[in-house]
Image (tube, rainbow over all chains, first blue to last red; front, side):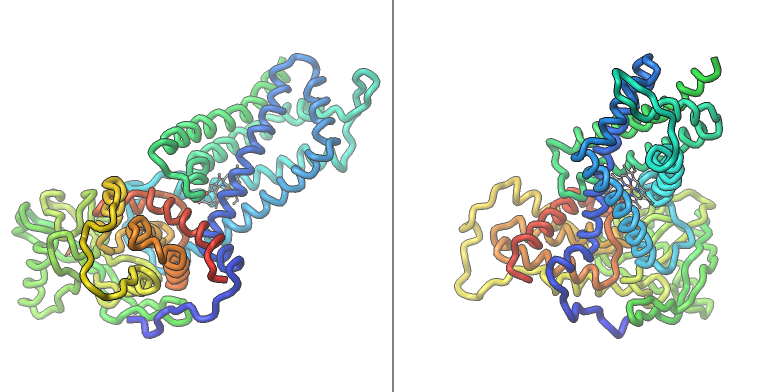
Length: 240
Length: 259
Ligand code: HEM
Ligand code: FES
């Protein structure tokens, strides 16, 4: 038996107490996750212009120019980077902490009897997304910010021809494959993550939870599918 | 029927030092039992095995049990990879051998969690739950004349919800099932049961703050909403109570006077 009964000796300030508690830390994961969910939806709508319009990328390039030059969007974009990093740090720290809560493993365990695959593998599904993010940022974001991208002029306005860059990247079947696999990972991450956010926020109610779960299912399938379709369709187009 | 049992045997207790669990060491031992009737409860089957062990001069398997009718929450056993075995909504003492087939191999292990050190074999120390209750799981009542039971009106729906939470027997299956060894289902049931009723509302903010702080101090993990706890809970306590506790906790941290 344990001789030393855990007691709460010195209490830090309430604010620190909150954000170091298990519930407070999980709230950070949920809030940043929710922000990323909103970000993904906006990002997808913007990107779909590449396959919806057959205009040589005019609509997409103008949209990208607007996003890159609007001040409010720039502030949100810095926030976005910060939230992704916060999401990763807090969730990794929390996952490690949670592992220490069970130092001796079971000899035989049957977790599939009581929980979903996604819910048990969030750290690995998130890691797939993280590797993808690094690759994705190197491929597009870093090139458009720091590299040389060819210019294009619409109605007397000169801007980066990001569409051409995307067309070029997606001629490579390896990159297309990596994108598709990553989106499967993202889909599973969201299958648990979407509805989990609301539970963490304290929203679990007979009136709303069924709707949230259905919406989460639709979102987790459609959004990654939309993202995966872009490289697939552009690759097919590049073949002809 | 005949069964092969693989049972965790541990003679020295686990120790907790500086927040780390030092295992007492142990291993899975294999036993054969025959003449098991389908109508026996799981604990009766173990009683039979223990009598065999005693007769052959071996140490019987230590396991916790008390009421044997599903209300005390003592019979903590991780059976074939699930707390309280394969049947949902029952404790180990209510699990019958008809849930198994002749010739089956059954794995029996203690709850595994840093906050539940093994005392011996299948028996674990669940006093962490008691300390969480001491931290706030009560209602302070000044003594005086007996008050009429129906003096304070309570809506039937509220009473029902509070009662659902109160069916928690504190067995620890939620912790055992959770991949994070989180005690959130237990703590949320206790927090909700008290804070939903008028008598418990006075202390609700301090209660949830203290109980969560004690839960964290005991070394239980954080909830990641896998739902394993609720699926394995012998009383079917809903995840709704965890959401409710989250709300209680956010509200208390924002508005209580405890700085
Ligand atoms: C665009 C990318 C991402 C989105 C939209 C996203 C979304 C989410 C959401 C909604 C949650 C649920 C929060 C909750 O349960 O309250 C979550 C949890 C989590 N995420 Fe992400 N995430 C992303 C990237 C990542 C990355 C890169 C990692 C890095 C390893 C990661 C690791 C985790 C972990 C470990 C959890 C907690 C798991 C759990 O509660 O079971 N995520 N994520
Ligand atoms: S022995 Fe009391 S609940 Fe099983």
